[in-house]
Amino acid sequence: MTTATLTAPVSRTGHDTVPLPRLVAAELRWIFRRPRTLAVLALLAVVPIVIGIGLTLVGDSGPDGGPADADAALLASAVNNALVLPIAALVMTLALLLPLASAMAGADALAGEAAHGTLRAWLVAPVSRGRLLVVKAIGVAVVCVVAVLAMCVTGVVTGLIINGTGSLFTLSGTTLSLGAALGRILLVAGWIVLQLWAVGAVALAVSSWTEHPMLVVASVLAGDIVFTILGFLTSLDWLHPFLLTRNWAEAPTEILQDPIGGSMLSEGALRAACYIVVGLSLAYGRLATRDG
Image: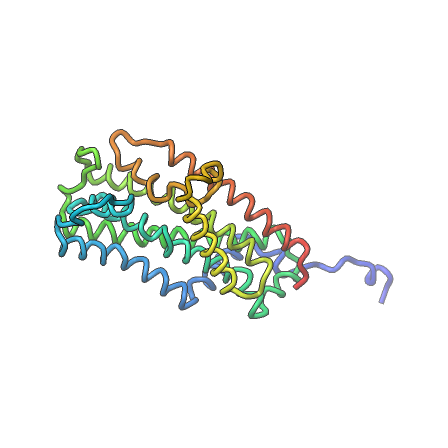
């Protein structure tokens, strides 16, 4: 064996030579083969159907008195309104079920694989930690998009079947065409997806520090509940602009107005973007120093 042979660089193969789209495709196949992921998505898709049937049975009757909160008012507006129904379903599940789906995806992405020993193969392989985080973040993002779109599809179909195309009108009383109504629903869906990406980024940050997926889910949902409670405390008004859950119930209704508002939507989008940057930065900082 010659000296040239001994000193010749060894060709590196494996993860470092696999294109990013192939890694993402493999990650998505793994995600959508998990029974719990499919179960949560199916549950979310059924929610608008249940709400639509319930509103049909109840009709126009509502509470006899007392001030209604934002969720109750939006739900009451969904009666006989095919435009409001899918948006009301999204806003109601944004309080718990949608963040749960995002938190579960983030927990499974790192902590779940660490618990099963599969994350170590990524960490010792010749693949950058940044690339690993990108693949995991894309997987979480896709779960959020699929969850929201599934609710939008079932909500729109349910609303049109129950109320027909003549029931597409805004909270201001103006009637919309089917295309305009679908456009507004997609705007709400995009805004909610951005909020869920922020939740997923926080879940990835927590997930990078533990090997227990349930701890990640519990931590993220506990934070969601704490943020909601803090939002009701008027003595902490100075803190409210920093709470991710601020205006989650009110902001989507701006799209239901005519003309469309934008103050709460833009504020919420900027806040979610900040959470995404911070969450992914913390996750990368941990992965960069993690060996297994």
